Length: 324
Ligand code: F6P
Image (cartoon, rainbow, N blue to C red):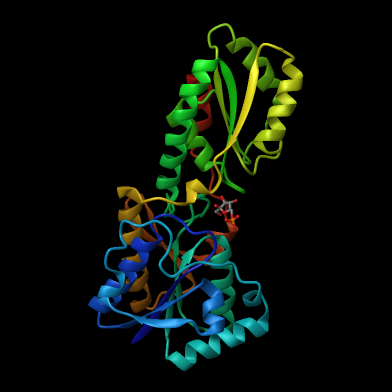
């Protein structure tokens, strides 16, 4: 293998740049030529591919976003789109790919590998942490700390005004950000897609808590089946029926996706990037390089996509015990 390419795809996450840097520098260290593909799968189809050098990735280890840009590509979901993509890679002489992204990225990579046999190794880049085969995903730690910083600020004003705040955090299908920011901020409740939310129980507890607390924080993962934070707030408010109690909603949104990556994310991203290139050189393909129990682990894309990563067992209990 002499030429490889790297791209980022799906929702960006802080640390993707550190991962790109690690891929580029490891590849060059090992004597490979390395190319950057811009705008994810769309860039493979369009031939938006440029040679990268050691200096191309200078001064990015600390930056959020992705220097290679990211996109979700509808055309790559079609066989015609993937054929075009393969032809472009062939024209550039690219013999291996590093795909940085989440489950959508790996679904595309798996099909692409199966159809054309091109070796692909993935790196887990998503703030959601919902990828099987790695303890943490690149960007998760930064997103949790961003959410935590915001919730701490809301806690100040919630306490000053004796208000109940419903705070919506990202996590379309997973509650990792909600749970960890909830534990860290001392939230009274956390609502996540992994468990069924019992609004009556929440109302009952909130009424009980009024004896000891004048304000409360409820963290809602955006994918919770009971609805958005705003919808849940309306339902709870109508059940509590206390004219003196004020309810507020804050949706944190895309601030969770930006910002300088934490040290944890930079280290994780760098390790995964290096492992992806080493994996390609060892003949690994159709798999993701993740870190489990401090060790590099290569997990087949099929498992990364198909298996569900459960929340850490005692985290929800912790929130319940500590919220009294
Ligand atoms: O998958 C990462 C994520 O940030 C989810 O938490 C969120 O639901 C989604 O991406 C938002 O995607 P977009 O930026 O395309 O609206």
